[in-house]
Length: 268
Image (tube, rainbow, N blue to C red; front, side, top):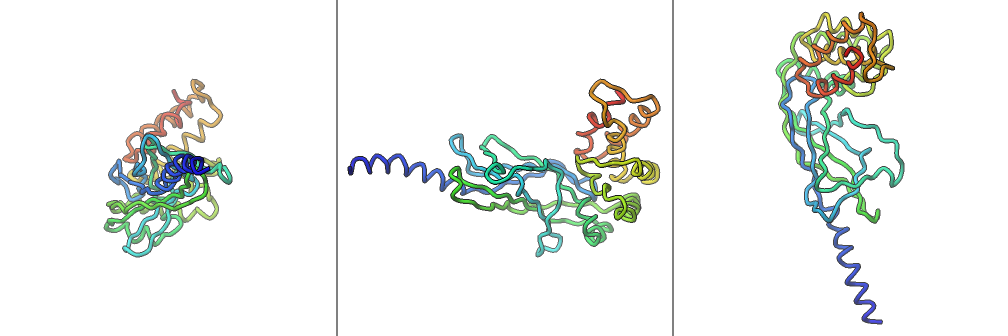
């Protein structure tokens, strides 16, 4: 019997040790693009420390959070364009190995819509702000759960230009009746025929704002809705979309440029 206990201990102890080590991790965040616009949307890459080829963690993607602080005391969560999770319970957790990297875009545009004071605080002179990332993880046995938080990184947010300010004020005056304008910086598109004149106005009157490029992207997505790869819309719409594509590709926001091809596909 003692030999049996010894054998069980030899098998179980390394496993328990591995489970314990699985939660000894820290997210490491790196900024891949400098922030070219007051509205952010620059790429960050996250890896998880202390993972090896033989270990992984279970990560709850639904719990991923970015926070910023502008005054070195209060951390404010910000929305970031990412996949929407609909799993429940243990299905929320997905394995992450040392070969996995996590990429997101930081969305300051949406932060300002929900807190206009934040925009006013930055728009005149810009600001260096701190940003951190956190996520819930579990061990493979689902007996231990932990929230892990990255060390803060510094983002240098440039001041808003005159078109930025004018476009922002134009949109916020309409946000109560057109809540879909909150989605301008995200993949989610809920555009309607009522939003098209808003897109056109921003493109025409605020061409030097990042918001104009966001509008060009969503305008094109609206016109290409229902068209598959290789299908074309009518010639009039094609000309609009091609002009929008030029605006999108000239944007300093990598997120918008990366979405240009699919969003303008029905003009090719």
